[in-house]
Length: 206
Image (cartoon, rainbow, N blue to C red; front, top):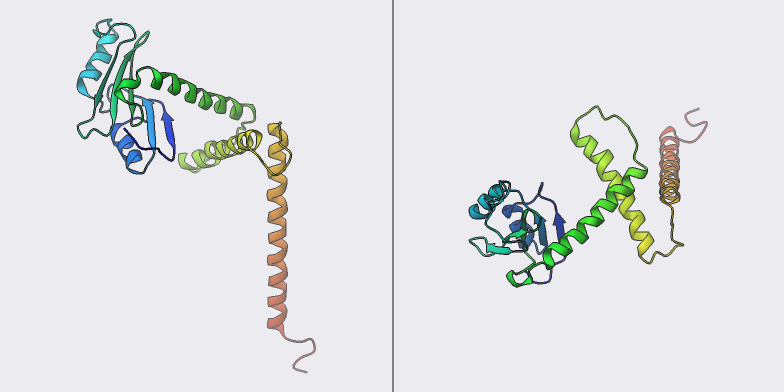
C-alpha cells in the first residue's frame, strides 16, 4: 500500500485510529497497530470482535479478513488467533497474511524491553504542577536516557561502548554538568567585563 516509508510506527490499541494512520501515511510514515472495536474501524469487524467474546464471531482459527478504508489508504484487519484480534496497517497488504502479526509482536517486544530498561533506574519524584510536567520530566526523559543508551550500545559510536546503564547515565550527567559549568563561567566573565566597562577606568573623574 505505502511506498518505502521513512519510519514504520508500531503501536497498541490505545493509540490506533484510521485518522491517525492516514495522517502518518500522508507524512510518509507507515503504521501498524492493534485496534479497539470502538476506534472507528469498519463496523462489521467491530461487531465480530464483540461477538467473539461470546464465541460467536463466525471466524475459523487463523482466518483473516482485510477491509480497506473507503479511501483505500488504511487496511483494517481481523485475525482469529485464540481470540479475534483487530489490526490497522498502512504497510501490510491483503496477501501478506500473518506476516503483519509476527512483525507487530516482534516490534512491540522492543517496547516491552524498553519499559523493562526504564524500570531498572526509574525514580520517584513528585510533580505538583500538572500531568504534562510528569509526562515531560518522567516519561520522556526516561525514554531519552534509555534510547540513547541502546543506540550507542548497538550502533557505531566514536567512543568505547557503555555496556552499563549506570555508567552511561553518569557519563551523560558529567558531560552536561561540565558544559553547563563552562557556559556559566563564560557568562560570568562577560558580565564582569560589561560591568567594568560601565564603571570606567579606575580613578576616573578625580
